[in-house]
Length: 139
Image 1 (cartoon, helix red, strand yellow):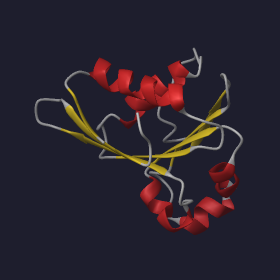
Image 2 (cartoon, one colour; image 1 turned 30 degrees about the vertical axis):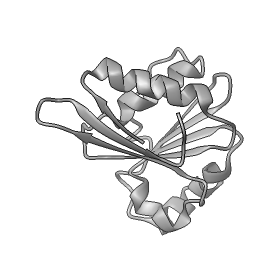
Image 3 (cartoon, helix red, strand yellow; image 1 turned 180 degrees about the vertical axis):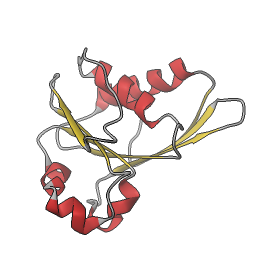
Image 4 (cartoon, one colour; image 1 turned 90 degrees about the vertical axis):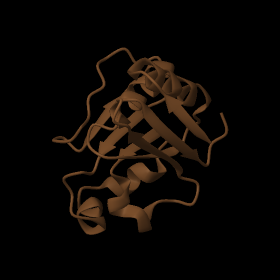
């Protein structure tokens, strides 16, 4: 499914819709360039899970865990080199968690992602609107 979000609020609202139908064990790959809006989607998903604390991109910590109606694991793999480093940090167990896992820059570990992974590609346009393509999830 393809979506066009004109404002940041539209992107967060789409994330909220995704969060409302998310299930335990779901893995979502958030892909897009720096500043495309991946974390904005994550904020909407977190809000749908009843999470009230601030959601920030975990670029320097690699992973943040939040408590809501189900655990939310938010990873940012921008700074890792690939699968070997991901395994060394224990990330593989988060691919099969009891909560919802969001991974930004998951293309670094493509070969490790389960077949059930939901892929969300976010592209930012010159007018700051976003084109969002969702595969593996029906809204």
